[in-house]
Length: 258
Image (cartoon, rainbow, N blue to C red):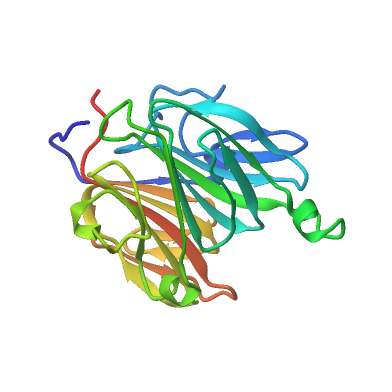
């Protein structure tokens, strides 16, 4: 991790321009290089390496697979996701539940959409979630798992620290990540409601649901993202449309060394 001399920049990335992996059970869109989709000019922003926007059909999912030395945060937008891992943790992730898995020196886990098992054959609902990866402060730590539910009223009140390793969020963030330079915020915005972005060397704004207007940049649709460098303080307002909007914002005070 490193800090560098930075030039202020606001880089808008449209949803349609993302890498996509489509199978009969999965529709996945990748903000950064991922799997077979590799672009040396698009590997990360700040400390964020993965921002995957996934829809998984009922009765399917990601079979058991390994991870190492990564802080993985999962945020469900619709449906439910069943998590199981090799440390003995298991749980159901649903909208408003923040989940973090520290891969550490090595972990195996699976993620399945078992809505039909949980609610009966009549409920064949897909699960829609965003999974985000940041590097830890150090490699080889013990694997770990944490989750906590956030009330809708809290998420509707403004930018809420969902996952953080920053000292300023001690006792405030829903879950901890093992990176002292990074924090994830979420907000559910009613139509016309706005929030102010933090000021940081690196920010990543992702429109998870609905449409918003970014001060100085204009309209952003669902799936659009913005990479901010050496700037912040702009306001993000939900468009005047039914349902409002939901946004995810990473504040980062370091970047990966070149």
